[in-house]
Amino acid sequence: HTYSPFDFIIFGATGDLTTRKLLPALYYRYLDGQLPSNTRIIGTARSPLTDEDFRKRAQDGLNQFVQEEDHSPEKIEDFIKLIYYISLDGADPNGKWADIEKLLNSDKANTVRIFYFATAPRLYGDICDNLSNKKLLTKTTRVVLEKPIGTSLATAEEINSRVGKHLPENHIFRIDHYLGKETVQNILALRFANPVFERLWSSDSIDYVEITAAETVGVGKRGGYYDGAGALRDMVQNHLLQVLCMVAMDPPISLNADDLRNEKLKVLRSLKPMTDEMIKTDTVRGQYTANTVNGEQMVSYLEELKKDKSNTETFVAIKAQINTSRWTGVPFYLRTGKRLAEKTSEIIIQFKKSAWSLFPTAPQPNRLHIRIQPDEGVSLSMQVKDPSKSHTSLRSTFIDIAFSPAFHIRYPDSYEGLLMDAVKGDPLLFIRRDEVDAAWKWIEPILDGWARDVIPLSQYKSGSWGPQASQQLLAKDGHIWHEDM
Ligand code: BG6
Image 1 (cartoon, rainbow, N blue to C red):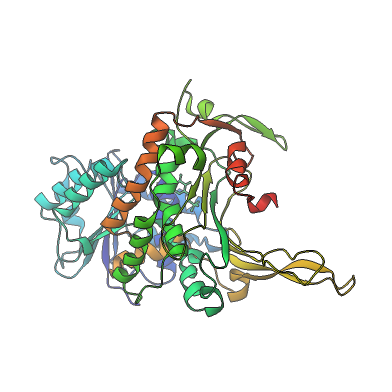
Image 2 (image 1 turned 90 degrees about the vertical axis):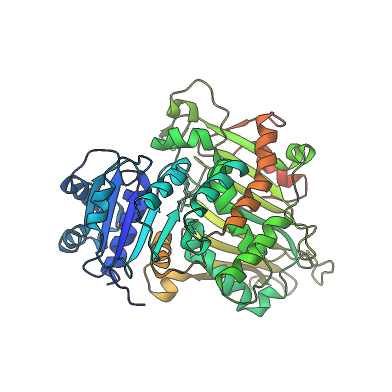
């Protein structure tokens, strides 16, 4: 794809996301030759910085977050020349909007204009009002909205309505960076280009599914946001449910964005609504406590936050059920948390064991392990004859594909492709408004039940796999998280 110069304006440009993800992603695409020379990247935020200050921050960020082998001082120098900064509160109608206008490419009718909203979502409506009043929204403008959209169904609807007043749905790109991850996209290929899997992809052959997004980091500097959100809003409402949709959806009738999103929406709408009874048996919420592992001291969530009390969950495990002919009876166990034992995002498809066995010891059922990160790849557990023993002895082994070595390529960060999709105007991997609503509809009763303490907030030691209750959630069904096998 060849790109014409475009304008990329970031609201919230002094935040973590811009430094860690957005600028490094644009830099990589610059290295790939996708940013023509009069592309402009304009950062805006309230801090009074000059272009030079902001470029310096950008440079430091790139040095830190771009892989060492891709550091080229000359290239970084060239790239940061595309960057500008305007001190502006996007929610303030009296800000320096005219300065933005002056910087933009003058060919208004044709230059693609991306406004990237990396601020608190409650400001999205105000920012859009201002963009509209200042006549900055053109036919080639797209806005990218970061998650979580709102903190509840009502607040999400309000944000979406206010943004929707000024822009048609196909110009609104709600980003979920999990959909930008290669291995999440690869679920489509895995399922729909390999009949060997798709024919088995239902309750006929699948026993249960695990979807995990585990992190070793704590909340760090993001406590202000995180303590008001919690893991359910931060990770489950968006990333985990989107991955669940990719695993569970029926084949879309085409790879057109709406056909794919229609299928994802069907999954979200088929999720069995959570009653208080189910919240008691099928959900777990936890918060990390201090611990020392291998000499590394980790403080508790409260200490990190410098607070005496917080009911915010940093760990969630949920047994989700999908009420469709394909999936009834197959639990989907979702799990995410901070300060867990490993940084890993993965999907386990646990196949059923065969009722009949030819062998003296029943064979282990097959398991498909989709590694979203790190070590992107897929492995399938298999039974083979144990070569060191008699002909009736079995042994478990794997067929394993590690993508990066297999294809000799650098694995791009999820933001790279998604940002360029927004520039191209391809919404395939972005979330449609009705998906956001459907996800909140399912999440809200859980939030509500937790707020009423239908289940207690469990504690777990930093560096562990979460509270005991998480193991029990599976044990009740006779299942076990795969790392405990
Ligand atoms: C973000 C959450 O959306 O995803 C963060 O806000 C979390 O809390 C991050 O750390 C995890 O993303 P990844 O790509 O590192 O799995």
